[in-house]
Image (cartoon, rainbow, N blue to C red):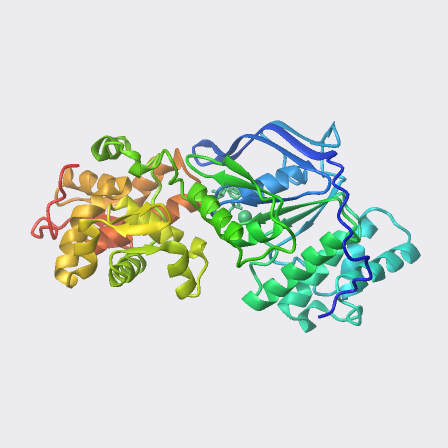
Length: 457
Ligand code: ADP
Ligand code: MG
């Protein structure tokens, strides 16, 4: 799809640096079963004219929540969001949003969908039509004005999403994972076109805020990458100034180097990481279900990763491995977190390195691997909690609701479900306990002994 790029080559964006959106000491919590659950804490962030800011973090780190607070779509719990120095009291008048799921009205044509934003602003019909046609043209939708969303491919639908946001000429264009529902090639194409437009200076907005969980996308598109971390709730973990020439060269050493640095921050394995010489036991003692959430990684997945690392000599560069599998590094992060938690592997620089236990596990037959896994699984605090609660209740059973209630003090119900799923998968595989989905009950049969008695950590 050719772009309508009639711009002068070499024009750069006016980076006048005016602060357009600013958050000060922003916190946000949602009501949980057990009081307020913090999602974001102490967020100080400025978005300036001329820049593309990426909010990067794993799922659940609060990226979408932060973006919605900045757009004034949800209120903050404390702290402020301001647009050009004026604190928000409702929707941010300087922003428009592009959503992952396009959010188009199926009964309206492309043009009518694009005009929606202007209708809300009370723009007269003739002016609306003209502005919509311009936005449609700009974003490469010429000829589709009277099509309905269902006639369009995913990529074309998202173009409508972009046109609808751009037509109001917002100071700040906000995008929440706008490419993640698209296939790889379509996403790549749309990203490229969007950045070309942005660089050409004919983009009718002055700044872009992009939410993504994809490190490479952030490094490709952003001037500044704000990494959000989720332990125990969303804070800014680090900010990176990208400073690479545009268009970005994925093959360059500088590009690679930045990906590695951002990756290390996202996984929390830089200086204060586990490898920095802290006592393993001291670390294990401090772990609780509240401060050490379980990653969303099943036994099959983490075993598969351990085996692949073993095939590569027990050590391999994570980015290379992901590439060979046709995956993004982020896709395998939960598995890496799981191996790390179980002490089966740790990061060493950019490499994932199997421990002696991990090596034994990856090389073992099914029965042996169950035994090794049963020794390692209680390193996951939630698995240990379930196992020891059952041990104090021999022959008895415990409802999943019991653990749900305990966790509800610290996590949202979605997170609780995800973690119990992981703990159940691990504990069952290790034969530390049984689980019945009806009626959601954990138990140890008195006549059966687990594959191995859980070792006292
Ligand atoms: P991200 O976009 O980084 O995946 P979100 O901002 O969507 O993160 O969510 C952060 C946390 O807040 C998650 O644990 C999520 O379950 C919780 N959360 C998000 N929206 C709501 C809501 N409306 N009510 C309750 N909890 C929510
Ligand atoms: Mg999100």
